[in-house]
Image (tube, rainbow over all chains, first blue to last red; front, top):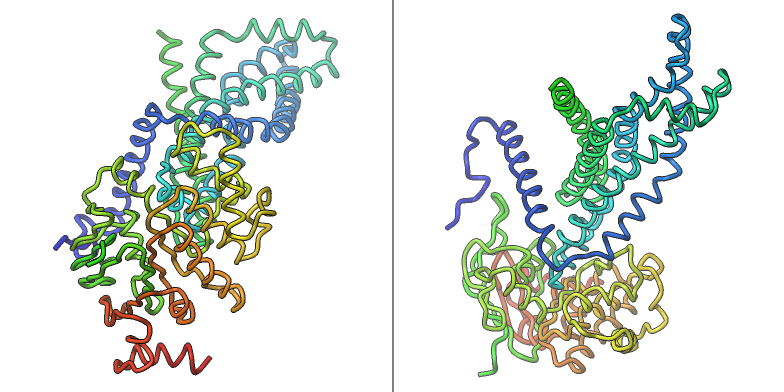
Length: 265
Length: 250
């Protein structure tokens, strides 16, 4: 007779055991993703469909947010710089802030809220209504169709959205700058590109890839492991957002340390 | 003796402290409609989920079409699954896809080299046979409960399974639609030459669709036989109350 899970005594305490079991589950989920992503059959059509949903359908929200961030950040920075008569440095300051940190972070946080929650809720509701079981009994791998496609789509689309956010935020900043100082668009963007380095752009793109992967995998993991009916679906969506945001901040901190170390080197 | 398509021996399954199946024995013969009856939570659905490898038994043998399900590798399990149709309690239609896409989904992933025309013909033929040809471009949210069940059955039939498993096919439906679903189950057996297990607690469904019925009580089959052998003169109080509630009280 196999040993029942309930008969096993907890190794440390129930809560600590549950935490480590959860970590092991999450690790196995990530491992399974990397195992299945390279194995045929490939669901190209579904990847494109998900890219459209994640990328194109996020554009209005991202545009508005990026634009406002650009304007607000410029307006907030102007008084400090004008005290030193350094308002001409605004394009440089904004470009560094937007490309290095604010663009990726703002986009990732918005995507975690919009895309992460929708992935968590969608897969969670498919789980509780047995749609995932239905895929499995029809000899289709639901992990490949639902998880792999969505994670690939978020990983590919977030860097593109980040670059778009950077552009929109810089446009917002330009409008704010040109309304107060006499600066042409060419002068503004020459100053912007003079201030940012190749390392800034590559680190921003690589960081965005990591953020995209995190948003996708966390949303899928929470949805795929949801239970307890509709209440579980709500919890999955909520947990997907909270966990993804938390991990994004940690990743931002780690990437910053690595990039600073490279810069110093 | 007729051919056995499913053979279950000493099957046990527990969830934590709860023993659901306690040594179940059952056979399903080729071409037969077997109805499994039992109270809610008695383990009826667990039994058919073990059959398709969605759950794993703790002990015992589950042989489907000559293969022990729990020992199969993913590839072999998927090959076996193609020979089994599973109609879910809530239909489990993919709610982001139209009826056509729902039916295409298992087909295009498992049968290669089909032309678009062949796929459409197959889908239209099946929708015709379940009486819903007009629903092809509808979303699941636009269908009634009975229509969803019919589409669910059509989706499982698209891979031409040898065994059909129906999980509570009449649950939550009005008596007229229940009658239509019961007719559909019988019609599927005749047209597609399937063997079926129908999981239900609806005795009318059992009477109309089953060649044999098996009553699952306290984790074991208490009575197995034709409806007339098991029910009208049942001596076991639990089986008798089951019959009385369905045919006398209601």
